Length: 534
Ligand SMILES: *[C@@H]1O[C@H](CO)[C@@H](O)[C@H](O)[C@H]1NC(C)=O
Ligand SMILES: *[C@@H]1O[C@H](CO)[C@@H](O)[C@H](O)[C@H]1NC(C)=O
Ligand SMILES: *[C@@H]1O[C@H](CO)[C@@H](O)[C@H](O)[C@H]1NC(C)=O
Ligand SMILES: *[C@@H]1O[C@H](CO)[C@@H](O)[C@H](O)[C@H]1NC(C)=O
Ligand SMILES: *[C@@H]1O[C@H](CO)[C@@H](O)[C@H](O)[C@H]1NC(C)=O
Ligand SMILES: *[C@@H]1O[C@H](CO)[C@@H](O)[C@H](O)[C@H]1NC(C)=O
Ligand SMILES: *[C@@H]1O[C@H](CO)[C@@H](O)[C@H](O)[C@H]1NC(C)=O
Ligand SMILES: [Ca+2]
Image (cartoon, rainbow, N blue to C red; front, side):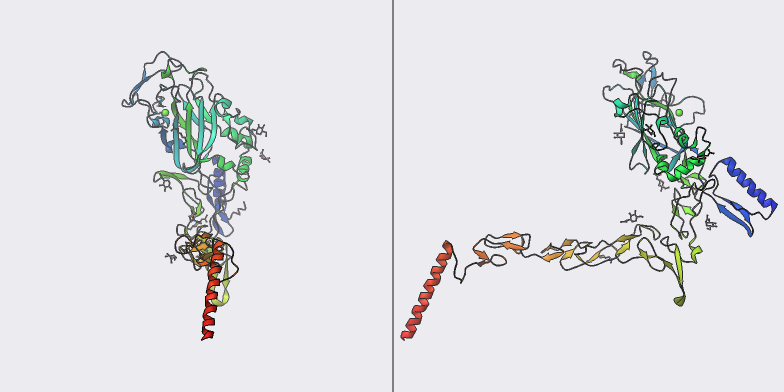
């Protein structure tokens, strides 16, 4: 950084600020005031919010309904004390209830509190439960997810994640006491992974084996062990991690999520088999779920706050949106970009630029260049992208129409008309995307035919059809193009007899006809003779 100090005091401030930056860790501040030759100026850095205990903000849902114990009240025992089934779960009694929120409470009294399910009294029907955790915000894991199970960890479980607020899900990690048996996957540990396959979804047996329920209560999704692959055993080389985050496809997304889901598929057994005569000792109980993460703000915010029911980035660099994933209004001179961890140590802020910096010409983010046209004295945007045109890139190019659900600065603002070439007069359409159709064609894109027309390189009038233009005398209509007539008939609709008034016909009916013709000739001749005779 080229900081040229003008006064000793200011450089002291600057020094302190940088010192603070170092002690807080990397990417903690978004900007600082630095002194230059010509006064003070803001310098901007890539920044991200601090890691937070995200369990405070999660919305928990458990499925199926009725999976939480206590309604009706139920007795249970534990794997360690299988014959002392005197414990009770009762949803209507505060001291004996085990509702889902006990997975995220702070346990300030020192007492372990936990969510508990009904017992496996319906064995051999499986005991299944889903725990869905929603934040309505993109988050990035900064440390291991830890789920604390009381009375034993499940012997089969899947951790799923969603990146799109629960619309689509993907498995994050599989857990089983026998991975091959449960999922047909070989057992792996994160320690087996290397830089090239760190984002592989694995099945681990590390957290499902029975070791007594008091010894090992925690099930992890290992984040630190994955960071260590890049940053070294004590995370001393974070530069290396951040460089990889930037360059390795899918690595940042691997640690990103908006929702998590624990699918509990089989509880702890405390042995190899399920004891049918004592099913009251099988259930799930979770006392805590730790999710250490930070808000994903695309390196444009140093803070994230809980507002209007969800976490939101406090966006800097003139960006906006829940994840700072757009440029603010009036700052769309360039297309939006996330900040970058590189070059270290401060990264690149990739700030959104005020439209004003281009000579007061707003291009709605569709062009980075303006040009001054001297003789008409206007500034105009050059090479509008995203199929826009106009002085401010505010119109759609010919052949495109305005997407009403998109803002003017949206990349998707212009939609291709997509007029059918054969059915329409030209490639332009009106404001609602309707094309201008040739005779006989119809539909928004002119790809359909009106009644009485059919598609043959565009719509052409039917020669025959099943309604108005019926083929006659037993003829059949071939692809609306022509009637296939019986041998005796001809004409567009087979309406004419083939041999009427003609000679040279063959077949029975034809010879009958020629007989008639011959007779009439004879008659005519006879008449002729009569006349001559007169
Ligand atoms: C858990 O979620 C999965 C995926 O949506 C679903 O198939 C399954 O039926 C759910 N299980 C329970 C017990 O609700
Ligand atoms: C999720 O967050 C968005 C953006 O802040 C907000 O508009 C929406 O209402 C939130 N939805 C819920 C269910 O909280
Ligand atoms: C990951 O790659 C390493 C070597 O690069 C290999 O030993 C290991 O088996 C791989 N892990 C998985 C899960 O494929
Ligand atoms: C950090 O890792 C990178 C490569 O990943 C390496 O080039 C650099 O020398 C390492 N720095 C330290 C201080 O170990
Ligand atoms: C953002 O815009 C404000 C004016 O609204 C300006 O003072 C500030 O310096 C801008 N920040 C960045 C990072 O461009
Ligand atoms: C219209 O704009 C919205 C908002 O950007 C976008 O989601 C949608 O895909 C666009 N529609 C088309 C047809 O491009
Ligand atoms: C576009 O054309 C269609 C069909 O001709 C018509 O219904 C629609 O009102 C037109 N829209 C506009 C904005 O003119
Ligand atoms: Ca608890």
